[in-house]
Image (cartoon, rainbow, N blue to C red; front, side, top):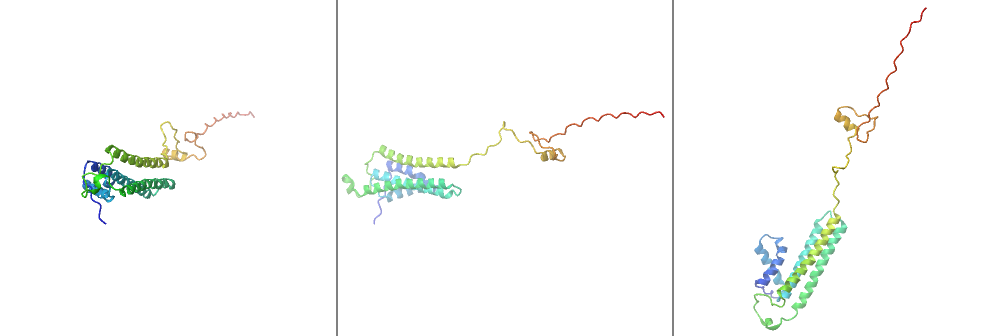
Length: 223
């Protein structure tokens, strides 16, 4: 089985490569190597026209996005079960979008190229222009919008599952006073166990003792 002919670079193909480059730059910092990988991947689908090439782009984008979502679900060890199911559902949905694009591409590849392009042996500088550039841009943007919508759905689920922030005591919120034991330690004394702490955390004070009554002087009795 002969390998599909490589598509030579051109303005339209460069736009397609720029669209797919972020998916390949995640595994290498060499942009030239990433571009070569994109071109080789696109050539493996055997696209001959712009419409077929755009379908190949959708297959690659949906496939990579589904794998990224599954990887995030696997990496989140503390992820709640409901949120993990949401990730799996989004990955399955993205995979179905890719399968739909793949079936459409297979149908297109079974058809003969229109006009004299079918008899051309050498690969053209650009894929056969059967789709306006604006139409191709809209189609690729639609795929990007679908991926972004699933990403937003996952982000909303993460925000809903996040624990609420702990409420710290504000400046106007009353604070609890120290206990009788801590108050005694700071004052260097012993805690007053009999006196309960008041509303402000201070030990209750004893009531002042009543003054003693004066004693009457004894008088001498005559004999």
